[in-house]
Amino acid sequence: MAVTTRDVVSQALSGRRFDIRGYLFEGMLLLALLVALGILVTLLTDVLIRAMPVLTERGGDFLTSNMSARAERAGVLQGIVGSISLMIFVVVLAFPTGVAAAVYLEEYARDTPLTRFLNTVIRNLAGVPSIVYGLLGLAVFAVLLGNVTGPERAGRSLMTGGLTLAILVLPIVIITAAEALRAVPNTIREAAFGVGATRWEVIRSHVLPYAAPGILTGTILSLARAFGETAPLIMVGAVTGGFAFTASGPVEALQGPYTALPTMIFSWARQPGADFRANTAAAIVVLLAVLLIVNATAIILRNRYDRRW
Image (cartoon, rainbow, N blue to C red; front, side, top):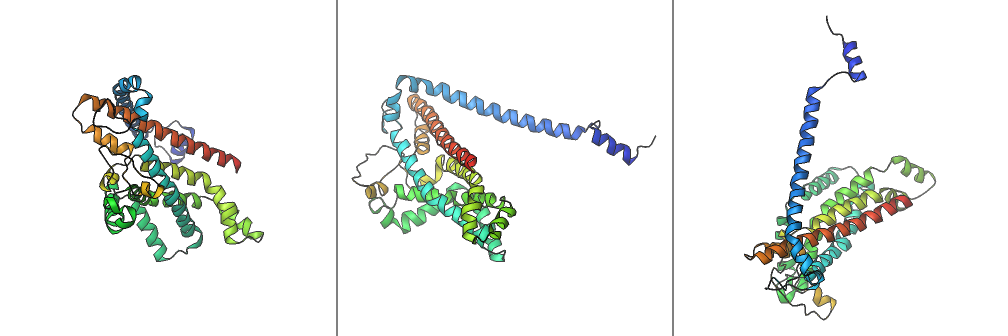
C-alpha cells in the first residue's frame, strides 16, 4: 500500500513518526554534555581534595599572606589585590568604550562598506588568541609607551597589564552590546520618535535601558575571561616570584610591579615541591571563589536593573 503525502504529514503532526536520526543526534549531544560535566566534576573534586589541607590548616593566613619562596608562608593576598586592580582597568576602560562603539555602529553609522568592514574586523579580533594581545601590549604599552606606563620597570607595570586586558576584552564587549541593541524592537524607537524625541533621547531613555540586561550579560562574560587570563599578563611583565609593595602613591602603584591569581597559579604549578602543588590547588579554589563572587554580584545587579525596567 502506497503512503501518500497526506499520511506522512498527518503522522508528523500527530507525533507518531519515529525519527531515529533525530533521537541519535540528541543522544550524542546528551552524552557529550554528560562527559564534559563528568570531567569538570572530577577536576573540581581533585582540586578540592588537594586544597583542603592548606585551607583547613592555614585558613585566613593563606588569604592574607604575600608571595614567598617558602610554601608554608606563601599566600594569595597580592594576587587577589592585583586581579581586582586589573579588573578595575577593564571596567573603567573597556566597558564604556565598548558600549559607546556599539551604540555608534548600531544607532548612528549607516550601512556602508566601511561599517561592514569594521564589524568584520571586530568579530575577527574577538577570536584572536590572548597571547597575541600580550605581544601587542608588550610592543605598545611596555616598549613604545614605557616612559608613561612604568619608566623604572621598562613599562612592565600594573598599568600595562590593565591596558592589555582592556584591549583584549574590548571586541567581546562591542559584539555583545551590539547584539543587545539589535534585539531592541524598532517599535520602541518609532514610538519615541513619534512624540518628538531626538535620536540621543531615544537611545538614552529607551534603547539603552531596554538593552541593559543583555549588555550586562556580555559584561559578565568579558569580566570572567579577563579575570582568568594568564598568558598576556606574563608577556607584559606580571611578577611570578616575590616582590615588595613599596609604592607611596597611586601613580607609583600604577607604574609598579604587580601579579594576579592566574600568574601565581602558573608560577606555583612549576615548583617541584608537594607543598607548592597543594598551594596551587588552594589558589585555584580561591580564584574560582573570587570569580563566582564577582559574577554573582554582576548577575544580581543585572536582575535588579531588569526588574526596574
